[in-house]
Amino acid sequence: MIEDKNSEAMISSPSGSKGSRFIMAGGGTGGHIFPAVAIANAIKKQRPNASILFIGAKGKMEMEKVPQAGYKIEGLDIAGFNRSSLIKNIGLPYKLVKSFLQVRSIFKKFKPDAVIGVGGYSSFPVLRFAQSQGISTFIHESNSFAGKSNMLLGKKATGIFVAIDGMEKFFPADKIIISGNPVRASITNSQVSREEAIRFFGLDPAKKTILSVGGSLGAKGINEALDKHLEDFGNNNLQLIWQTGKPYAAQAKARCEGRPNIWANDFITQMENAYAAADVIISRSGAMSVSEICVVKKPAVFVPFPYAAEDHQTVNATKLVDRNAALMVKDSDATEKLVPAIIGLAKDEQLQTELKLHISKLAVTNADETIAKEILKSIEAKK
Image (cartoon, rainbow, N blue to C red; front, side, top):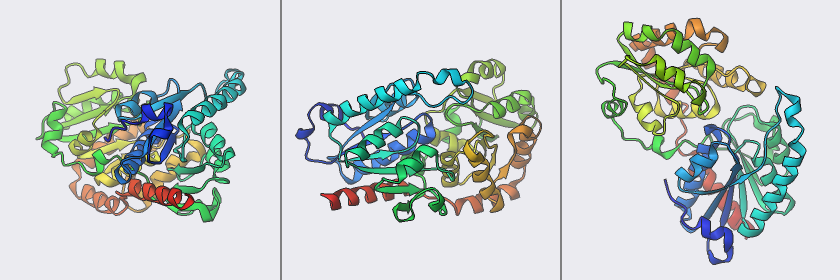
């Protein structure tokens, strides 16, 4: 990662820099955070004297992950709309007003030339305020279905980066740039060997290895399915790298005691090792997970999160299934069908080869560079 050593100084003395200043706004999940970091790194690579500040939501994972990537982040006192408990939304208007005041204070100190929103509810007040001040704003929409906030912001955005075609139904057609989704450089440029990666997890390179990732926050349906059928992995001479998410971590680790063929933890920091170790993959089908698996060219069984907006994860997975690039198991069927499906795939070398061939054709490895280039070109034209 490229460390933004000037960002802390810049927030208090913006006049001291000769480079452009950018704010990256959003977060909540790895699917928003990691693309934002990838774009920031690409901007720094093309313009080393650029200053970059992140803005996220206090208490969310970006407050931990962004500093780990070498960037400064400011947190807003904001929360999203709670659909499961309407009473919890009573304080939402107050938090929204407070967040706008916080954003105004940050902008006054940092004086950004442009703002890039990557999704998550913390991006809305940042981009909305930027637009009210005539500051260039850019949106990265990773999913096949745009969120309502991005649709509102898109009307006044300078440019909108999307992963696929057909997004004119959500955004002004003249502002859309099809870039693909930015995948972390640590994954796209990884040189880690399979054997080295498997030993990183304390497993046996001689055995077929299954990787299960349920997104940065975990996946209940996947976790429960694996938990119920843990013995099946050992019985079939298979080993498992299991990213559980925090809610399921303690239970999973307890269940894995005495099972040397299973590695379990709440989060995998070095995903390049996990992908290199995997012969086959179990995953949710969020946009970023799909993009990463296309890049690493691994056969996968996708289990779409059934409550995603407009069921876009099923849309994502279906597009791959229709191209013979992946398999899919519904979340409602996961308990009984997921483990048999992944074991069957692990044993079927011909099917693995077919899936790898077709998924590799969908890989985009330079989305971050494309986005950074377009943003910098737009900023320079405005100056």
